[in-house]
Image (cartoon, rainbow, N blue to C red; front, side, top):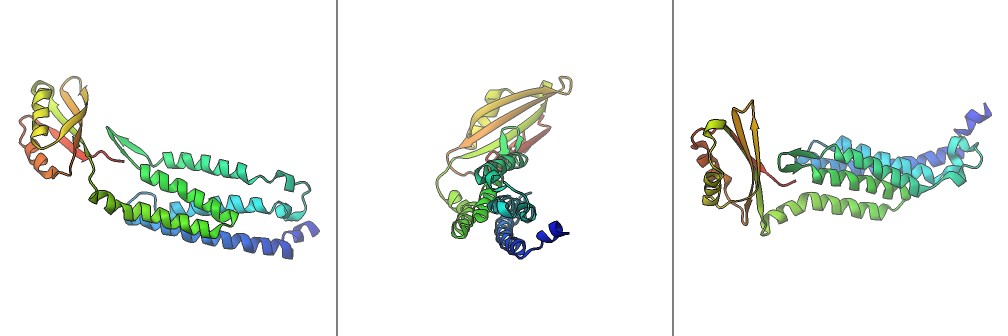
Length: 242
């Protein structure tokens, strides 16, 4: 009975209260970053970011009170506490979670920004767990600004545009690459990479192209031209930026 009561001693309750405050702070930060991602239609939203931040904080902050582990009855636990090992484990584990949101479709890669934001959310959770609240708030603000505000700045600044184009023809009607390249150049695009695929037992031929433009162009004009290509069965035009 005495061992059970040790888990509800004043020292344990005070420690649990401090840990709970850390977790509430992590919850708030995770929700803010998650809302930004959810607002922009990303698969990982408030719940994912809140869970990542809270979990990172929980694992870090409990490592600060080894003397209170197991109701304060275990001996020698202080020597086992090593926050750096906990941090390494957290960041390694979050790496696997981030890899799960990265998707590759042909030449296009999506989810890199989401994976990076999940990783930094875990780092913010660790910072909160260590008690650096000002630093955690600063990193959270920087993260939200980078993920949301810089988007419009990127669009306004001069930049190169990349598109991924897939064209599918009957094998006997597939045009020459020179003709396709001429159509792209006529609309201001340069073909920077090619991929070819003969499928469906030799009855379908597929081109995959990466289109490169030095200035933003209206892809709708290219779409109208593609609709008029003889023999074209289907096409897919998508941004090639992650």
